Length: 112
Ligand code: HEC
Image (tube, rainbow, N blue to C red):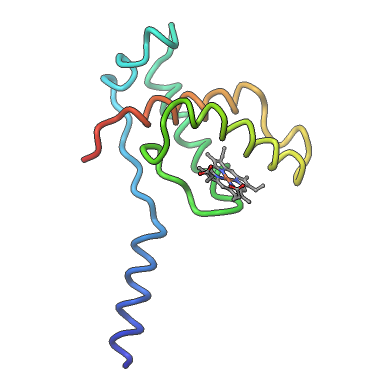
């Protein structure tokens, strides 16, 4: 019986720590027609902000779990929720844009 509990806990732990794909320059190159001037530093900053912001109410969702178009709907909705809870100045428009760009970019990354 004890073994089963341990197994279940381990499975839950593994499921909760969403492994994020490390952004690379080729991800930036893929979206550069859409986001002129976008850099790997912007992409990485978006990743950090996503990790700090989007796990406040639920575990982090995987960027590849939704399409670019879905993220464009979801991110403003979620940020709206966060602002309602914590106040308008909890996150800037620029930070929101970095999170959106990160998710849009990495939604198109190949899974590996
Ligand atoms: C203030 C709380 C809160 C924050 C912060 C938050 N979410 Fe959510 N999120 C929710 C709730 C509640 C749901 C489930 C209810 C729903 O989907 O309407 C949800 C559901 C989701 C879903 C599933 C919905 C779907 O349409 O499939 C995704 C994807 C998601 N959140 C992404 C994000 C991202 C990305 C961020 C960061 C920008 C974020 N969330 C931040 C509260 C939050």
